[in-house]
Each structure stands twice: as C-alpha cells, then as structure tokens.
Image 1 (cartoon, one colour):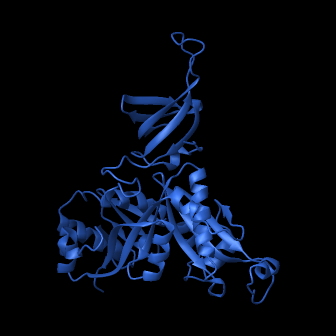
Image 2: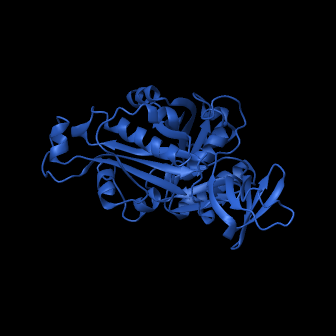
Image 3: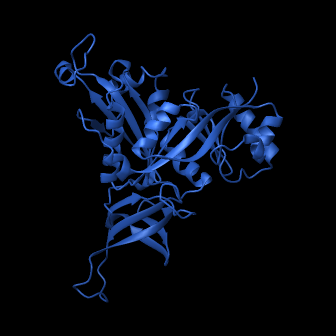
Amino acid sequence: MPLVPTPFDAVHIGARVVVRYRLGTDPQRPAEGPSMTDATGDLVARTDSAVVVLTRRGEVTIPRDRIVAAKEIPPRPSRRGAPHLAPTVAELQRIAGPSWGAVERDRLGDWELRASAGFTQRGNSVLPVGDPGVPLADAVDRIEEWYAVRGLPAKVALAGPVGFEPADDSLGAELLRRGWTAGDRTLNLTAACDAIAAADPGGPDVRITADLDDTWLAAYSQSRAVIPDVTTTVLGGSPGHLFGSISLGGGLAQKLGLSTPGSRAPRPVAIGRLGLAHGWAGLGALWTDPGFRGRGLGTRITAALAARARADGIHLMHLQVEADNDVAIRVYERLGFARHSNYVYLTAPG
C-alpha cells in the first residue's frame, strides 16, 4: 500500500493512520535489522515534535523528524462484506462529512454544525452523528438558535438505511413534531476505486490538480450560483481535494465530432471534484456543458479521478445523488457504485 506525505496538522485526532518512520540507533538491534517500520492505528496526540499512534500493541510515540511518509486510512469497518459497503450508516456519515467543506464548523457534543452563508445544503446543515451531549429537545433548541444567529434556516441531514422514514428516528420525530419539513432525499453510493477506474471509456485527456483554479471555478459557476470567497472556501475546505477537468479547444473538439460555440480557446467543458478524508474519496461537483453531454465525458472524469485516488493509496469512494435522479443513479451503478444508505434534509419552519 503506497504511502503519501501527510500534513499531520490537517488530520483530526482519532483518525486512523499508517505512519512509516525511521528507527533510531538502538544498540540492542542487530546492524542488519530493518531501518524503518510502520505504525498503524488511531492518531491520539500530536505536538510540534512528535505524534502518538495507538496501535494494537499500545501507544507509539514517533518523533516528527523520523517520519518518512504517512497517510490517513479508512476507519476499521464494523460490518463484514465488501469494504465500500462495510461501514455502518453512522460511520459513512462521519467518513463523508469532511469531504465537503464549510466556512464555519461548530460542535454540539459529537454533532457537527456547519454554516456557509447558504451555499449548498451540505455546507449549511447539522451532521447529527453520535451523542449531542444534552437532551434531544435541548439539542434542537440550540441548533435553531445557532442558525438563527447566522440568519440561516436550521437544517439537519438525517441519515438512515435506504428507504428509511424520518419519523421512525427519534431525532426525526422530534423535528417533525416541531413542524420541520422533510425533503431532498439523497442516496449515498459507494464503490471501490479499482472498479470505477476500470470503467474508463477512454477519450480526451483529464487534467487533475490539487489546486482550485479560475477556469475550473468558471465552469462550476455554470452549474450553480457561486458566492465570492464562500464557494472557494467550501470547495477547498476538505483535508485534501482533487479537481478534474476536460478542456476542448477547437482541434480536439473537431476530432471528437463536437462543435465549440464561440471562442476556440481551450475551456473546461466537463469537471469533477474529489474531497479526500478518512482514507476515502468523495466525488462531487460533476458537471458537463450541455453542448457536450452524451459523450461520456463525466464518466471519463470520474474514472480518471478514481485512478488518481487509487494511485495515491485511496481505495474507496462515495458520492451523494438525489434519490429521484433515476438517470444518474443508473449511470453510477453501471460504473460500479452500490447503494449504501439514505439521508434526508429536515428544515425548520420559517
């Protein structure tokens, strides 16, 4: 499993990591012994000079100047089966949460409150996983107050098995009792990066970069309204991210039998984004110019991003798609994604 450099200050305490580090000079170790070793476990502490990893054999303190390479890896699954289907509903919510940024994040016990000036529902909703640390009714009161201060409608992303009903969940029942409305049911799909990369149909080159540039953002702005500074903060707010694009100048467009309206200068006509967190890659912001649809460009970008994630040692992917978008769901399932769970947005009245 390849290791990639990891800035430990960007990895949250509690994340599962593997760290390769140089062994110090040890008079008890034979000269021909190994010079490096790996520590795999939970990151429990870090200082300017060292990190502490809780392994099966106990805590290991690793001086930072001895670290050769490291990476965050997926949490140990609670269920058997294919690795991408093994996480529980709650575990997948924790995994997927950081893959989409937010301007502001706050904690209510284990719950996370996110606000981004109204840009995207994911960036402006509560991730209610775990214990809020207060009685349920008090937790809802605090949520309503927190969003009211920011001039935003209180919103909760409530997850459950595929087809679940919010009223059957204790939090969902409390919100519905208060007059909150449920809508925008969304499917969580998961897959192995290998399967998605293998579905690559071929085609034009895909440019992949870790930086959000103006041309990518200009293409993204054609799919939804953007908010200066806020949008870039959200798109660039994951622990890691990759931005993919296909740009078609006049020559390449003609080669593919396509026409480029207006300028012949290269411009992105298809884009996609991966948010990297907890050893998973979260696919989002997938868009193709209406004049270039039906040519497999979205599939090409998805497969290329999966291949890049796999090359970086990430083997699992997730994405969110509206549950009533039958066309998109069929495309994703043909690629190799499977239905894992649902979530529903509940929004406070007024």
